Each structure stands twice: as structure tokens, then as C-alpha cells.
Length: 295
Image (cartoon, rainbow, N blue to C red; front, side, top):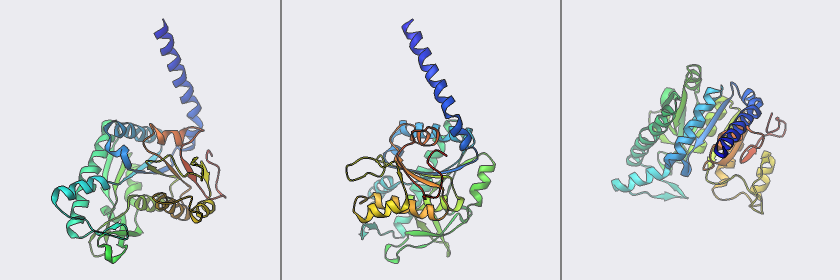
């Protein structure tokens, strides 16, 4: 009897959660959400399965998700196995011809197809591509001294909107094509921001290994304006690896993204918590003239 009562209580809680989520499900119907997926969650099978299930649920309720992934640790492992030495300049990897071939193999092959398969295993219809496909992301050299490291300078997102119309979930490897046909490796956050901007996405979710942007005392700041982000950066509160993410957020907002959220991708159902609950997750950055978090 106690077991049955506990099960009934769980069912009631589940039904209540679904009922409370209704306004948010309605709010995001037809919305485009770009998700940068990476960090520890990408290398853990259980976390990958949970993430894939969440993405399929988003698509099922009418959201148009786009997944953009990274893959630095796996690239490092393969370069080491092949005996290709990495050199760094100002903290960035110099990417020569041999390195970019490995980068493309790992990103477009191993990692991209693993994410596609995980989503398909949960009942979704995922399609893997890179920024080279259909000239989605045309790039120029970010710094000639770094070799084949690129920055997006022209975006052609029609291929993504066509996939949305067909009920597909795009999974994008952060590679771009140069105007002469060369391949460029693009920072995953940068690629996600550029894609979100080109789509005028409702949300850009940057999944990372920390809970969000923190104040001087270590507490997560749940909502920020671009002006506050710049001030915290100038004060040194936002520092280190968080700076590239907040810079991506600011650039995305300037190009028309409604809001950017930096959140902990290790937390179970982090994306669903952010989109479909009143609580939200992580740090939301939006222009002050745009609507509050939950509208």
C-alpha cells in the first residue's frame, strides 16, 4: 500500500508539473532555440541520452532546436594518438593543414554522428552537417598566424529553416568554408552565436561546466543586461573562460537574438528547466528593452 501511495504521489506531481509547464510550452511553440552542447556532458553516455531526450521533447512540442557542438578534448586525444604536435600562440592552437584534417574528421565524423545517433535513438529525426554545408558559415582567417582558425563573416541559414520545415533537428559541427574552398575550425561558442544571430533565435543556450555568471561572492546572477556584463568584465568579476562566453552572448544579442542563457550542462534536464519552468536556469543576458525572462 505504501508503495502504491508513493507511486500515486509521483504521478500527481508529474501531472502537476506538466500542467504548470503549459504557458511555457505555448510561449515557445514555433520558437528557434540554438544550443551549444559541450563540456563534460558530451563525453558521458548517460548525460548524452538525457540531453537527446530533452531535445526530442522540445521538437515534439513545437520548438525548433539547433545543436552546435564542440569537441576539443577528443581532438586533443586524436592528435596525440597520431603524433601530431600542437603549438599555441597567445593561448590559441596553431592549426596547420595536418591538424585541420584531424579536426574535421573528429567534429564532422565521430562527434557529430554520435549526437545525431543519440537524438535518433530517442525518437527524433536529427541531421548532421557542418558550417561548410550549403555555405551555412563562410569564414575568413581569424589570425593568419593561427592557420586554419576562422571567424564567420557570412551566414546562409536557409538550410536550417528547410530542415525545420521538414521536422528535422539540425546538429552542426563548428567548421566553416573559406571563399577559396579551404576549411576553417571555428570556436564552438562563436559558431553557435553566429548561427543564432542569423536565425534571429529566441534563445541561445550556452551549456558549460559552471552554473552561470557569478558575482564577487560566488553567487549566480540570474539576469543581466549587456551593460552589466561589460561593467563586471571591466571590474574583473567576469574573467577567464567566462569572458569568451559573455562576449558571444553580447554579439548574439546585437545581431537580434532575443536572449542568451549561460547554464550548467551537467545538470539534468537543464534546457527544459530553463525553457519550461518559472525557475529558469543559469544566467540570462538580454537587452533591457526586451521582455522579462518568462514572457
